[in-house]
Structures are given as structure tokens and as C-alpha cells.
Length: 114
Image 1 (cartoon, rainbow, N blue to C red):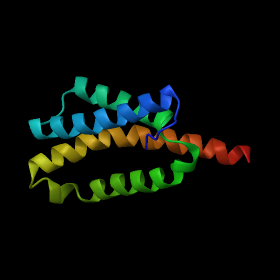
Image 2 (image 1 turned 60 degrees about the horizontal axis):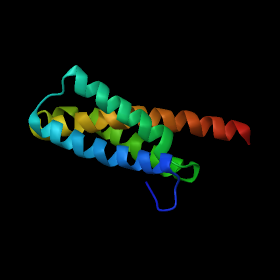
Image 3 (image 1 turned 90 degrees about the vertical axis):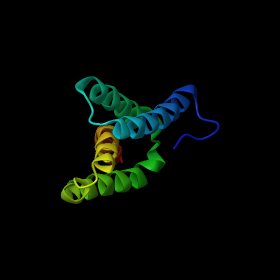
Image 4 (image 1 turned 45 degrees about the vertical axis):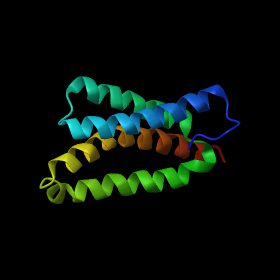
């Protein structure tokens, strides 16, 4: 995601991604998310989608994000038997869903321009 030579906003997006994933994993292991943490993770996801994903990275990111979202939706029953993993995945989804939506919208507008 974040690469050398990017501007400061790309670097900020890279840090947001790293902090968001670490925070999601830690919060997931600590238990269910309260609404404050959900909003923090959603905002981090929006920052990641807006600042961290370059145009040439959007297709792989969208594929990965879609697979993560679909697999978690269909695997919900399986993961309910392992609450810690379920909590971690839910926290990661709170980041990836807004990021994926933002990147998808940007990608559609990019396609429309061509």
C-alpha cells in the first residue's frame, strides 16, 4: 500500500492503514466494539480509501476487499464458534467496507473519464 516516494498524504494514508489494522486486531481480541471505536475505525477506513490506494492499486484492492467482505458474510456462522476471531474479523470489516466503497467509487469515476 504505502510506498516510498509518495507525498505526505500517501504516507499519512499508509500510517492510517497500519494503525487501523493493528487497532482492529487489538480491539477484536479485547471483545466487541462499542460505537465510539466503530466510528474511529470507519474514519480510518475512509482515510485509507481516499489517501492510500493509488489508481493502479484499485483493482487488486477491490478484489481483495470484495473477497474479504464476501467470505466474512458467508463465514459468519462458522466464526461465531470462535468469538475472538469473529471479533477481529468484524473489526477489520469496519475498516475495509468503507475503504472498499470509496475505492470502488473512485474507480468507477476513473473509468467514466476514459
